Amino acid sequence: MSAKVVLVDDEEHMRAACLQAFELAGIPAAGFESAALAVAEIGSNWHGVVITDVKMPGMTGLELMACAHDVDADLPVIVITGHGDVAMAVQAMRDGAYDFIEKPFASELLVDAARRALETRRLVLENRALKAELQNGNALERTLVGHSTAMQQLKGRITGYAASDADVLILGETGTGKEIVARALHELSPRGAARFVAINCGSLPETIIESELFGHEAGAFTGATGRRTGKFEYADGGTLFLDEIESMPLDLQPRLLRVLEERRITPLGSNEEIALDLRVIAATKEDLRAAAAKGAFREDVYYRLNVLCLRIPPLRERRQDIPLLFQHFVSESARRLHRDTCDPAAEEMALLLGHGWPGNVRELKNAAMRFAMGLGMDLSTEPAVAAGAGQTDCRRTLAEQMAATERQIIRQALTANDNRLKETYEALGISRKTLYDKMQKYGLSTSGRSAG
Image (cartoon, rainbow, N blue to C red; front, side, top):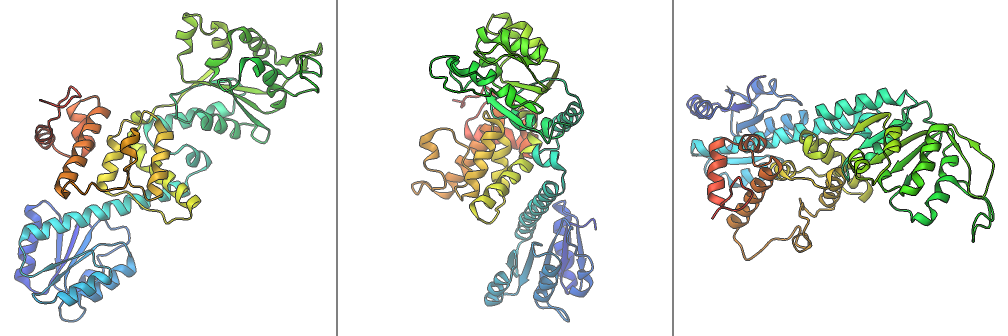
């Protein structure tokens, strides 16, 4: 149905007054004189809420609430009670009522309660949709979570490139998931049943990287007491992933180039060449072309690696994926920690969407872990701030703490949107005037510095 509020009251003048208040507030509402008539309008995927009087002929408001919760246990129901029915209101809350309003009441109170309930309903349905998408997606969808245009294009290229046996260069900032993309390429390829061998070129000392890659024979150097199979040979038949390829020593790159071109290696201390059948995927967070121009990376190696290229977008370029990703990581963490899954509130989601995410998906995953542990929405990077996560500053009033939180959300949203007002107020879901007024209130400016 189109109505966002189902209002049930047997008194015609009360229904009319409430419906008029909702119309003036721009909230679609439908009125019913009995609970029995309203039951048929309630569904599990309905985006609305129920507001009902308690004492009515036939089915009471509490009985209507029980029927509504049989359909959907998360459906918000606001009950209207008469003056002096405090005990009944308390029992209604215990039975699952979202809120109660005592007669007589101001129309503003009714509208405010409805808006809060509608926001709660929106978040519940949104989280359900996110969970369903995570559960029902294919293997690639569950591995690379996100439905933004950038991610859909990336998944399409991965699917297409996986069928090829050509080498791939993956470009992406720290924390964007380069190894996850490399594994997806491998698992979707005809080599998926064979080994995926990953090596981080930046984590190995130059003294052993040659042996790690190409292997060695016994006696090849001091301490080589036996034969060692290098990563190239070990990946034979499968895929070799060279992460942080920009860290490959310059004097080793000519040998790497030869292996990439000929698919043959000669272990240290041996004269016998070993033929290889493997795919090579390399990843970098640097601009290799610029590095080659400065002499920090061989240009011929760059062009040999860059047969097919995949760029992973940073999180700030696909903000619409943040809710789905966060839900995914919270569920993962809660399962590992044997905790119940919890969903972020609206203001917490605003914090997520307004944050800059310099650490990309890895940083988001860490935030989700802290959230699942009950530490709240701690997005700070400063130890002094992070140490107080989940704690309340008792020296400040609630209003002061809420104002500080709102200021932080707006400041982060401005930073994330390069101080562009239109993108900022659209991301926050407020009007331009509201954003301007709040910036004035909190001393914020589009220069990125506090005003005054």
